[in-house]
Image (tube, rainbow, N blue to C red):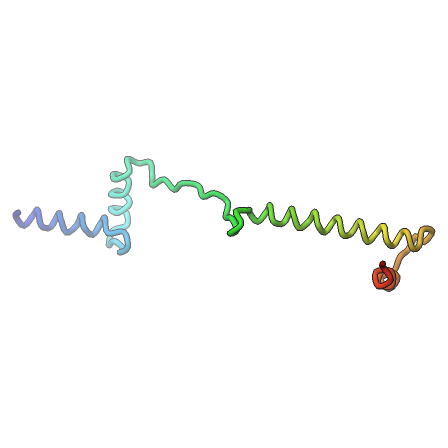
Length: 102
């Protein structure tokens, strides 16, 4: 290998070393373009992150919302059974009704 081959090899090594900045950004960009045929590097889309139970965060939240709605409806039925004719129900009234619940 002659001196010109060594210089070219050194320059090519510097261009393709991904973790090290190149002295000439345009040359590096051209080298990466040549490597990929001008199409860039493909990054596959990630799937949704899952919990150890195998459910996504959305599925977990939806299940919790359903439980919350069910409990709110139960509490509302309890309060309405206690005060059927009252239109404004205070927090204190709800707490007393919950404490008296059978």
